[in-house]
Image (cartoon, rainbow over all chains, first blue to last red; front, side):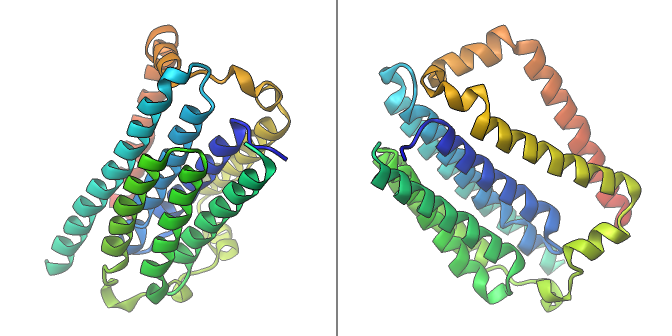
Length: 91
Length: 167
């Protein structure tokens, strides 16, 4: 049993599908916002997997930085979403 | 990667998916903890892929996002227990929604089969790097990418209009 390129991509796709499920299933803004970190986690795993198994080794650092950037983007989107949800509750 | 790392990767990914599902369908008190476990599992999966910087940044960022999102209060204390289950939601949905759900399930099965048994799995060494993917998407397949982007824009616009009408 070994890990190939398909493994991280399938794992990332599973996390992204779970994030979309959270966005569709949630009955409130708080529940739907769960999708943001889950989607970011799925994208991060996919990008890191592509970087790890890339044909050209020069992409390794680029993929790592892109994966980190995706995670930070997920945090930024969550901050915006949480602020939006709290503002909606106050109204 | 050897088999031990592969097993660790799949266990971490499974933990992340299970924790995310627990945060989605479980009680509100579980949400922050389950999302933290999801962030830990995803970061560990990335660390197994030798991307330690991304794993560290991901753990901090996704952990922060988990605490932020998990700490939000639900209006009226509505819990998942009060929501109808998947079977009842499917039975009472509109025909277009039912067709979409069946199509999504079929697409998931096809994608899982393609990833497990298709040519993509049989030739893992031909997976290109990020530069090649970028050249393919924005150069060779630019028209197809724009078509998909337009389709997604129309789909999400329709979704937002439909949800706005329901509210």
